[in-house]
Length: 372
Image (cartoon, rainbow, N blue to C red; front, side):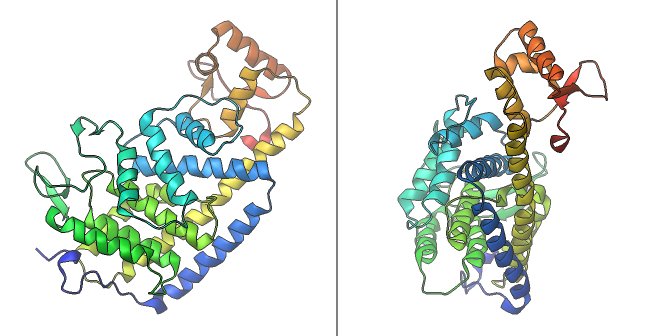
C-alpha cells in the first residue's frame, strides 16, 4: 500500500499550484465581501436572526456529518442564550448540545485569540461532557493513546472491514500537534487565510489527535480561519452545511489526498468549490430572514397568543415535517382542544390554511405565499 501523506519525507511541507487556484479563490473572496456587505446592511435584529440561523445549521450539520443528530430547537436555544439574544420560545438544551455550541462560538467569536493545546483540549472535553462517545468511554480533553489499537478510519461489516486511513501513531501526536499549533498561529508564511483554512482542515484530520470528534474540531478550526478571512465573528454562511450536502465527495477527496503527495492542489480546489457553494447557499438564509421580518410586519396588528407566536416562528424558521394539531399541542404544551382553537383562529385570520395534499391527519401551512 502507498504511504500516507504524513509518511512522506517532506511532511508537512504542503505545496499547491496557485495559478490553478487563483480564479476560484478570487470568486470566493469576491463573494465573501459581497455577502458580508449585504448582511451588514441589515438592521441589528435581522443580523442577529441571520447569525442565529447560520450557526444553528452549522452546529447541526457538522454533527450530522459524523452520524449524530441533535435537536434543532435545543441548538437554536443554546446559541441564542449564549449570545444574549432575546428570542421567544427557547427550550432547555442538553449538555452535549451546549458543548458543541460552546466550541463553535469560541472558535468564531474569539477568532483573533491564538490557538493553544489547552484550548483544543477544552473544545474536545466540551464535545464529550460525560466522557462517552455513544456507548463507548473515551478520554476527553487529552490526546489519544491508541490503547485499543491504531487510530483507523474503517468502513464495512465486521470481518470485511476496509481501512480508508490510519493516523500517525499516538507517540507522534504531541510533536505533530505542537508543529500544527505553531503554524496555525504563525503569520510568517503569507498564505491567504481562506487557503489556510483548507490546509488546517486537512492537516488536523490527518493527525487525528483525539479518540473521537476530530472532524468536528477540524471544521471548527476552518471556521475560525474563515472568520479571520472575513474579519468579523458573525457567521453568515455555513461550510459544514455544504460539506454535509457534498459528504461523499468530501470523504473521497480526503482519502485520495491522504494517500497522495504533499501537492494538495486537488484538495484545495475541492475546498474552495465547496466554500463557494456554501456562500451561494447563504442567500437562502437571507431570504428566510427577510420573509420572517416581512411576515411579522404585515401581521403586526393581528392579536395572537404566545402559543401561536411560538408555532408560527417555528414554521418561519424551517419547521421540518407536517404541522398537525397533535404536533401543535405537543410543542405548545397545551391540550388538543386548545391546539385546534389556536389553529382555527389563525385560519379565520388567513394566516394558516389546510394543506391540499391530504393524508390520514389534517396538516396546516402558512397561507402567506412567500413562506410556502
